[in-house]
Image (cartoon, rainbow, N blue to C red; front, side, top):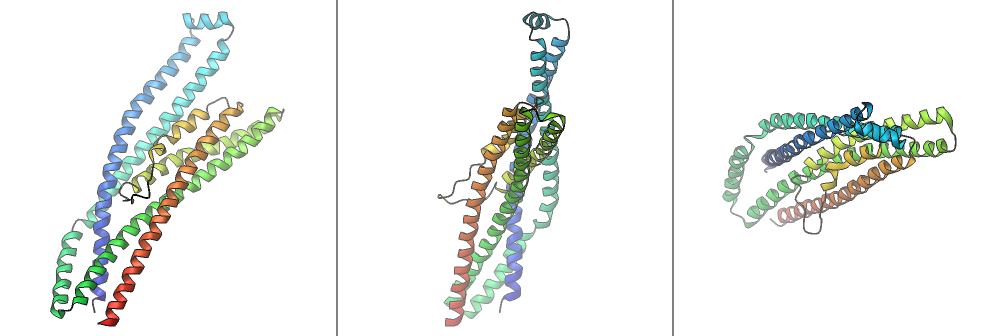
Length: 312
């Protein structure tokens, strides 16, 4: 009887939910952008300091003379180079995240325009259906209307949960790639410690470069995952903690600095990858549980409607 109207109401309801989701996502992205801009200032200062330390060691400064007398100038110089490279990697990654966040904000602002009239159109059509149902004057008709409205709500919500799950799975693909590369680098690094030679060292460096590229991509996808989770309403039994996602790249690049031959550095970065992998897996498991719960609610509502129609 109301098949066409129901379909249109469902589409309009999904648009209304998307409009609200975009609003929440924009707030989260603007907050991320502000944090990234503040972080950028700190990282620029850190890089300036590290480069200044190298410059002081290169010059005939009091610091340089002090380390020369101690016989540890080259060792200190290498330490400063490592710290400068770590600072550069963090700054470059942060600039990339700022650019990606600006792009996401612009994209969402354009998409939001598509749903600006959805609420008005939904209310008008809902009123039309309500009046048609009132004409039938049956209690079942009113109850069916309420059940169909709940189904529209559940379907719009489950779509948002599904999008969050897909975003999480995209992160997991890159995490697995980084983990695989670091595992390989760790293996070749161990071989290198026992005199593997130039070829072994080159292979190890290649795996580390792959891991670095994956890590930068992971941070971008983690930020998108955080945004998708911004308005996922979780019941009291499910708590999602995503605070650690924002700092993944910092921990990763602190591990992978220029002195690749230090095996513990590879291990530190591998630990940070595995830690965020566990965190993302944990969130995905909770989202899957939530998805199943909402799916069950839709099934129950549909069964109740079918029973009412049969009894009418």
